[in-house]
Length: 222
Image (cartoon, rainbow, N blue to C red; front, top):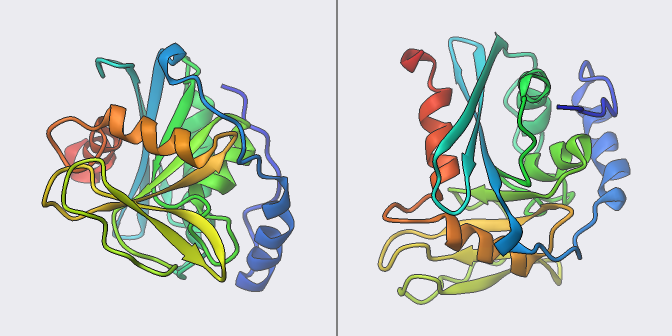
C-alpha cells in the first residue's frame, strides 16, 4: 500500500510539536462515510516491550469481521514516551507495516486518538495524513477535554469539548461498561466515526478490528 512520507521521524520533542501544529490544518473532518459501502476495515495498534515496538494491522471484512490480512512489523522504539507525541514513538513502525499491506482498507480504526489532542493531531489524525485514507481514533482512556459521562445504555454518547471546540465524543459501546473516546482521524466526520465504531462493536467494549489488532500486536504472542 502506498504511504506518503510527509516528514522525517528523527526529530526533537520541540520539532515534533511544530510539525503537529503545521499538519493540523491539512486534516479533512467533514467527509461523510457511506458505511454501507465499506468492504474492508483495518484495526491498527502498537505494543512496546523492552524498548521494542511491534505494529499490527488487521484487515477484516465488513460487516462480518473475517480476517483478510494481518501485517506486523517490529523495530527498536525510536522516541521516548511523551504525552501528546505518541505518533513519533509509534509512527515509524506503523509506516513500515502499512507498506506491507496487500489489501487497501476502506477505513482504518486506530487504538488511540484522532482530533482528541491538545493540537488536534493524535495518531489517527497524523497517520491519516500519511495514508490519505479515512481514519478514526478509538481511545480507551481519557486524554483531554471536558469529560461528561454519557448515559449507561449502549450507543449513548456525550460531546467532548476542548477550549470551546468539539473534538470528539465519549461513547458507551456496551451498557454499564466504561466508555471509549471517539474522534475523527482524517477524511471522515464525527457522526460517521461514531456510527462506524458502533457497527464494528459486538459483545466487547472495543470494536472488533481494534480488539484483533491489539491481540496481534502483543510481542509475546508472535
